[in-house]
Structures are given as structure tokens and as C-alpha cells.
Length: 121
Image (cartoon, rainbow, N blue to C red; front, side, top):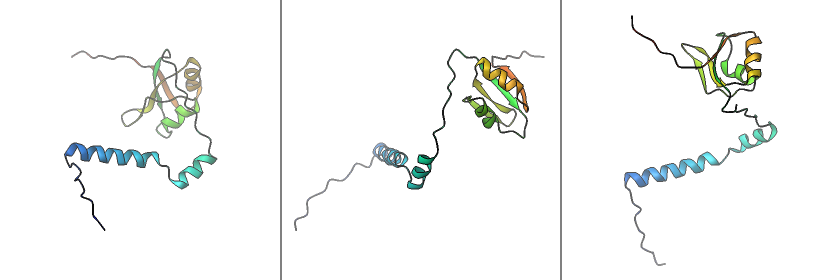
């Protein structure tokens, strides 16, 4: 049997990084068999992206509530969920979503997002 000469693959840091990213992309695309079966049974969640003309709000909720779950109840897609200094979320909300959140028990405040500046003492 005749052996063919092989050419060494380049081993520069860039080629190694590209190969690693390509392998990670392939792994991320392939679903796990169990996840595929579960996903086929469950309906896909509907994302309610607010139009760009809706105002951005910061909503604060009681500490015993999950801010992301509160956002989901009104169909909002949070830009950010706060869990440390502030307990709530920020999102673009329609007037109907704002009214629903203000009427919801456990929601402490629904305020229009804006710029804040401080000046010295």
C-alpha cells in the first residue's frame, strides 16, 4: 500500500481560533435528541417586540416577584432585567401594556425611561 504525503495544517493562532469557532458553530446548530422531542411538543413562545415608536419604561416590582415573569404576563420583551439595586425590568411598552402593569398587584412603579443628570453639592 502506498502512503500519500500529507501536508501539515497551519497552526497559527488565527487558524486555531477559526477552527475552534467553526467547531463551536456546528455543535450549537445540532440539537440534542431529547431537546428536539420536547421542543416538538411545546408551542414556541411568541415574541412581542414593541415598535420603535413606543416609549421605553422602567418597571419596578416587589422583591418576591420575578421581573421577567411580570414582563411576560403583558407580552413585553425586556431590554434588561434588574435584580440587584433595582428589582424590575426596562422595555418598550404600548399604552395598553403600561395600563395593565400599573393595575397589576406587585408592580411598584412604571416610569418613563429618560436621561438623568446630577449636579454637585
